[in-house]
Length: 190
Length: 190
Image 1 (cartoon, chains in turn brown, blue):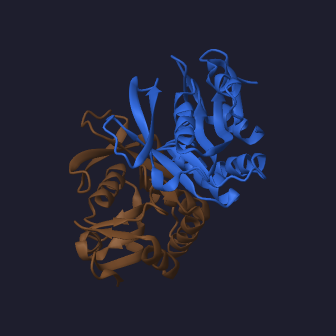
Image 2: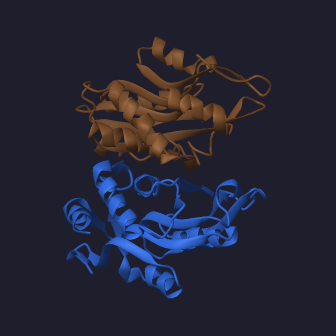
């Protein structure tokens, strides 16, 4: 998606250790006009798939999920992140690992809001190694829900997490696909 | 705001210890059509005040802040919550207390995205004792930003936090104002 790629080139900052900082518009300060446009595009790609729920993870997935949800005309639902593995019986849960923060955590969603009659579109701001997305997919499987696929703002394709999930059968649509990135040569898209 | 009050009466659940559960539409599962309508109303009330930034707190304030921001045509910005008081010099921070979770935490916002040229509208899903809202206001003061006021979805008026902040000079507009609430008699609005 050209609009998003242009914005990443203009305002994204590449740091050592594979860090792409886009917090001026995507995950701290939020350019909601841009997010609405990205959400519109993701909704269009999954039109006609019968999505009943847009699932994301707190906190940085919520903004994009809201706009996708509004354009698909169904609710959004955000998984909460917990440091404890002491989880109540009223929730679906799955483990994930944060490479950014170097810790494991548990994603939880109330069983009241996700079940076997749901068709889920998973939405997130970033896809790198795929741990968070895989955990959200795991939650859908535990709930017995169908999964239409995943709509992602920025995929670091070279990290391989997206292709692992595609090979496992998940439809993944990423609006900006980064082929390579470093502090010298900058960002190259697929 | 009638639409929101009706929804609270229909789907909100009152539990002992002053708990109002609205997570079927406001802060876990999100009815984004409703949130868009509430955001439209908040934006309308602050039209013409020159707002340059909508400030909220992760995670449950983000959805409403996104819609307010979209309708005001300015960015949103969400404060992150940190358990440590070991805060970098690159952020504005303020302390808050969660009565729900019984702990203190620190709200942080990057100095890059909030400064003395900003006119801020603070947005949050809930206002009860006012600790979170006060911390967001404190952050604005530290940044030297002007504050147009606060737009809130649900205020528990009987807890008094909103009136303390109004008395201190903050314009607070709440879309549903709960006068009293208990498990026997249900919810009464102001």
